[in-house]
Image (tube, rainbow, N blue to C red; front, side, top):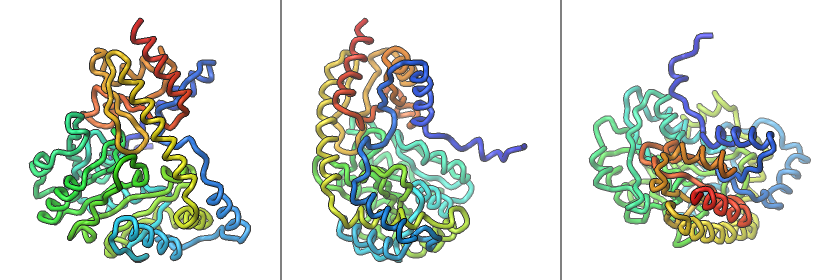
Length: 386
């Protein structure tokens, strides 16, 4: 077969590549501690699973509307209206199988060949991948440790051009766990309004904040009309395998998103959506307990890593990642992750996989037990001090 040239522009998530390498070593009998995957190590809350079972028994196994079940879209609109204080209705919501389609559909709908899109660097690799696949040009927006991995507003302004057709932000942030402050978001909003540029706001970690409260860029004047919010159930409710995400956006974009859904996915699984309504409206006790445990793990691993010679990391304000500075080891980020896997039996991700600004860092997910995190730190310290 002769493949289209654009297929070369697609990249994969390195977490899955590293996991495959680790699984191969495990098959050979080596004990690997997995700190690579961005997935809560908790089970989906029981009330959500029960809602799915009831939906299955009730025959909710057929096609639904491409944009999502009306009752699900309504529940999402009500949740977000309360969450950020901006009034949304079901007509602003599209439900997709996982949250990535919101990203890819927005990029597809908004970018022409050669258009520029500002993307966080380091940032989720699929942002750049999808921009390139759709003929756009990703323009990296550096997030530096010296600034707590927040963007520099003046640098953002300098990167705006007549070709800029989309800005992507992500807060809380993958891979650093950093957050954009209210002032940061207000500054981005002012730029977006002044230049009439849409913003794709990836808010998948909105409930995973340890200090303060979640802030969305959509709350600022002129931004509801220019913001596409990306969110879903994978992180907050430990529902990664359920594959349900959603977007909130201006109504004129909803029709295009629904068309893309019809052409590519038809619809999102009906019984899964019913379970998601329960996620939003039901008890939140298990979510609260999960976040309490994540905070405990964060505090533990940050303290432990900072005691290891040649390593350092900042305490993240959100998500469940630490972005460890490994520059003093003399290894680049990919060599360091190879060292971790082969010498320490630890699977983690090279910061360079998240963009040029990620070089010199390694991402650890602390979605693992404190016992395993402690063992991982002991192994690293022992190997580095040989």
